[in-house]
Amino acid sequence: MNAIRPPSLTPFRTVITHFEARSGAGDDAYEEGVWVLFACSSEQWLSCALSNGDVKLYDKERLEPIQTYTHGQHLITDLQAGSGPNMLIVSGMNGQVALYDVRQSSKPALTFVLPRNEAALSVSLGYDGALAAVAGAKAHVHFFDVRGGGVLLGSYQDSHTEEVTRVRFQSMMSPLLVSGSEDGLSCIFDTSQPSEDAALKSVLNVQTPLREVGFFGPSLEGVYCLTGSETMSVWHHDSAQRICDFGLDLRTQLSQVSGGTPMEYLVNCYWDASQQQLSLLAGNHAGDGGMFKVDAGSISIQHLLLGGHRGDIRSWCALAPGTFATVGEDARLCEWNTKVGSAVPPNNVAASERTKQNAAGGPIRRNKTKTPISPY
Image 1 (cartoon, helix red, strand yellow):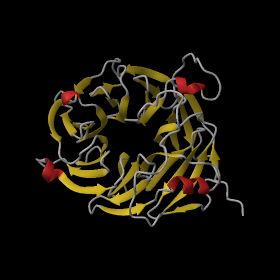
Image 2 (cartoon, helix red, strand yellow; image 1 turned 30 degrees about the horizontal axis):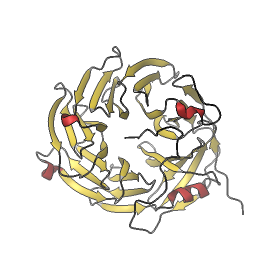
Image 3 (cartoon, helix red, strand yellow; image 1 turned 135 degrees about the vertical axis):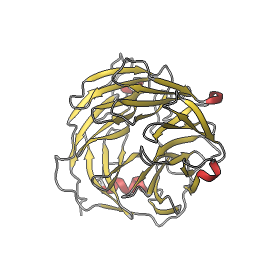
Image 4 (cartoon, one colour; image 1 turned 180 degrees about the vertical axis):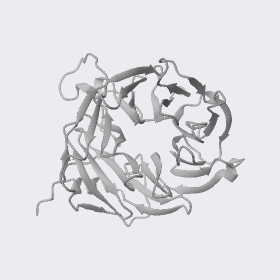
């Protein structure tokens, strides 16, 4: 029996974020150019971080460029919308974190730098934007007083043993913070507590270096974890219990339920509170993608994303109900509209019964004709 082909989407709109001369030719010529590493959005704008250190800001309604910020010649490691509709925060390998007010000039409204020349690998805002948590390359999580001029308030130094790759507050108003690290641990902190020992609420032993973490669930009681070996698990953070491990063969199973379209890497997850739904985006090296719905014991295909990108998809973000944007290594920004298409077929990926993971799982990205740029 032939596999049921999932409904497919083509881009509603596409923007080329960067133009430059190419010395190469053919399908891989884009690899010599600038990549788009991250994307985020607010109510009015969409922003993306480029591999040359630029941050591009677009009007979300028309996708017309508004502003370009230059974070220097250092790789950007994270990009997040701020507490208000006009704030944008960026972290970089040079250890600098910059907060931009999009109503003002191209210069940042505030900058601060991690101590001891430590690279800033991720940033997240909490306490209504008053507190910035910054993940460090020396296994530390640092906290800065944003409204107090970027003063360093303190650091967590003992919970991780290797570089912290991602930090995310539960919400802009919540004191709960999740961290992910190369040491294979994801830690949950209550940052309202006076010390690191008191703040550490639970430790999730994922056992594989972590690339992305985040909260989900009706009360944001869950945590999803994506690893550098392209595996995924979901947890209940308060009890530190694993809800589901989707196994080392997740990409193979995603490819099967995608009607044979290969899924070679995982991009990231997004929790839609209005729909009470956790979505996973995966992709392949030809630029195609798949949007999947994640349930407690299975993952089901929703849409194939075809004809948008020519290279790996690096990031995605929601724009409005039914629409989202993807960015990738071809310097393209694509907008997708899920309201166009047919009903979702009942193709599911059953969760693996495995309770343990290891570092094997295949390459994160394909081999490049130039030196790869680390996502960290």
